[in-house]
Each structure stands twice: as structure tokens, then as C-alpha cells.
Length: 201
Figure 1 (cartoon, helix red, strand yellow):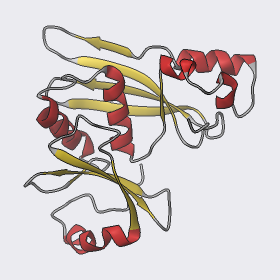
Figure 2: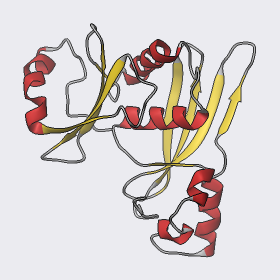
Figure 3: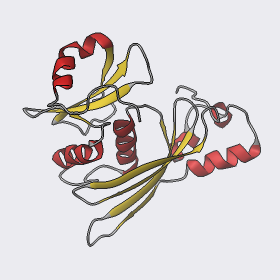
Figure 4: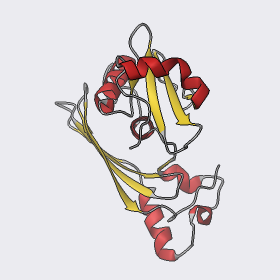
């Protein structure tokens, strides 16, 4: 994970950079992608000089800004989710939760792989950099319903999902959490960049 923006909002580096962010970064408001966020402005910064440098920020009303893609981002994202939803996952479906965790933690867009991808307007072969039957079978497995388990007593949950990056890699994510805190969000690249392609829908 690359973050060029200082991650401590109280640091002198952050305070010095803050007035200049919009001049050096492309800034996107993520309200359309995450309509559940009503108490926070979620912003996505991408460097104008190096598109691989990016960061996501939450701007809670009347509170210091937090960097969700930074070192303490998992804890800060937990705070945002609980503040917005009351608990994790609250009223969010598992696909919405997976998308929020992946995008806001990595500051990178992409496509959540789920059954909807198999029913989209794009033909299935449009996702393949080079078609073969084995690759199609793997892609169909990645697009299975997300694996979500929750202990009804404690509320502790585990979530597993697959994600396609803009560069055509496949990531596997394993998430664990409680109603109050995301405990773990680990990603593993299981197919390298260029394995698939991004047919913008």
C-alpha cells in the first residue's frame, strides 16, 4: 500500500500540506460509491504526478481528518463504520462492506467479484486478457457469493472475497471483525497483474 500523504492529521507535515492538496492531487468525493456515509465526507486523493500514489480520507464533521489508507486506517475505518451504522456490518450487505474495506484501505478502485459480474452487460470473455477454459472456470469461482460467517451470540464475523484490480490482478481478502472493530483485513495477490483485463462497464 503506497500513501504519499502524511497519515497523522496532527503532524506538521500534514498541516503544511493540507492547503495544497487540491493543487497537487486529483480529488474525488466518494459519496456515490458509499451512500451510507452521511456523517463523513469520504475523499480519494490520487497524485497528479504519480498515479500509483493515492490515499483515502474521512472528514467527520467537527473532528480531525483521518487517513483510512494509513497505518492506523483499519482502526479509523472501524470508527467511521460504527459512527455511520451503529455497528459492523450494521445495515450494510456483505458486498457493500467488502467494497468499502477494499477501496478505503488501499485507496485504489477495482471490481468486487460477485455473481453480478457473471450477469453484467459485458460478455464473460471480455474480462480475460487471454482466454482459456481453465481461466474461465477460475473466474467463475471468484464470482461466487461472498463467504460470510457470523457468530450470532458475539457478533464476531469472518468475510472472504475476491477483487479484480485495475491492472488485471486478482486479490483474495480475508477480513475478521466484531460489531465494534475490524480486527484483520489481509489481502493476498493470487493471480498477477495482466491476468485479466478491465472492460469498463
